[in-house]
Length: 352
Ligand code: NAD
Ligand code: GLY
Image: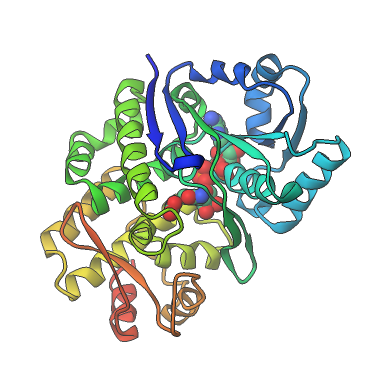
């Protein structure tokens, strides 16, 4: 049975429909559909999409974060224009966070805004990126530096897509789930601590469905309270200020989820130094990430100066000072602007 989480944003409200087999609802989306997907998802699910949507215009881009750049979005818009989509068009993002972020951005700017639907196919996209309307692309100067808020008109989360997801991508989704537990829900964190290895070794769709639903409820609550990140929503970036820096410095060989895991370890070190979590709770987070097979240390090839420089370019910073999200015990978080020397010490503390 499908579960529904409502994102109560007034005239921009929408449903997140979650369950095994819910992708079949895509057939009810109507006319004017423009499908955007990546090369890997097309290989796996192109035939299903043809059957579900009929002979719709489809834009396929090379899989991977390196495609998440302005040129791809321009190509998506140009294809939509060539196929004569008008303002009644609905773009469909079938794929992971890269597809969702770019398709949403293209939908936001094509003819000054058309509708779009998220059909996330990675765990990371199911628990995080498909919900909340953050869309955009990377530029060499930084991750997600160009983008807008544009809410989808629906999110269809079919857990069956997880059956083909490589274990590395499962782990990346788990990093965002750990994040959600640390910042918002100690109960979710404890649930992950119950046999974490099984979450990686065996894809139990029932267990995942509950976890995905909880993450969507929690994220929806934050988005409804602060849609455009005037305050509270910033806590969703826990681990991301350090993480984005590492992701960028590695030229994306460290994936988003892995970088967030490393970033959460650095943030927890900082939180211990500043007294907002205990050493024991930081150790629990590290133990959980390690049990899930996620990285918890940083390679020395990324110098502390390079990491600090990349962090200094994060779009959340203000007044020339780096902003970071710190856990406040497990289950709560706060935004801080600590002295740069404390941030430096936290990065140094997570070197392998
Ligand atoms: P991704 O979209 O690149 O997907 C990862 C890989 O999995 C790709 O190679 C893809 O082809 C493959 N894949 C997708 N679905 C599959 C399936 N069912 N079976 C097999 N392979 C599959 O990356 P991601 O990890 O999903 O997303 C990361 C991106 O999300 C980053 O760009 C990050 O900035 C963004 N993000 C955005 C938000 C937001 O709120 N908008 C939140 C978190 C992350
Ligand atoms: N992933 C951060 C946000 O949606 O705000």
